[in-house]
Length: 203
Image 1 (cartoon, one colour):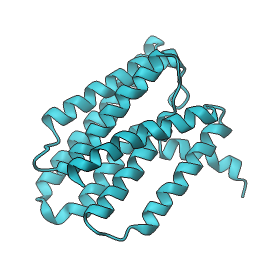
Image 2 (tube, helix red, strand yellow; image 1 turned 180 degrees about the vertical axis):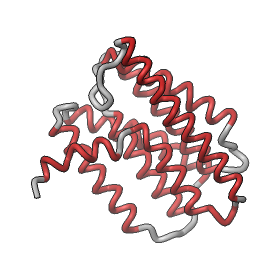
Image 3 (cartoon, one colour; image 1 turned 90 degrees about the horizontal axis):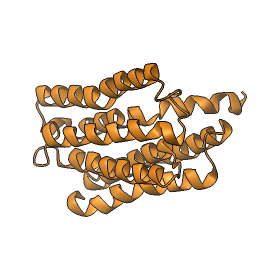
């Protein structure tokens, strides 16, 4: 088996656009007994619309206008508008869809995502290309670890898988020549730092 042929797959599986859905699904997997099925479905549908369907629609609009040219390897200039749109959609999600009182842990996960979006947008403005893939997988790993600790559930294998996935995604981005080592490391920091900082409010 040629690992180099498999590595690019991880860039698609853990593309930033899917991270919000992965986090939401895991959250409700852990907390399902605390919610009505209708609450879970409504929240999940809202998350899918605001973090997947709308961003994809906007991406294809931007692509048709020539604002972006690649789904996985955007230049610094191409990153500005999509990241700004992502931040706005996360703000809408926090304001109207994810309740701080009802789905507290999920609220802070998305709030951390909003902070990460603002940080990476700032990085783009100062001409630094932090890895969005590393931001996403690092934030998801921190969230899964936090939920595991909060509910005292032994997700050792899952957390280990996430840590290994961080390495595989990083290797994938290097293999695809999409990022340098500093860009990957800064991405990890931008993804982890807001999640770890917000632990104090819910963990």
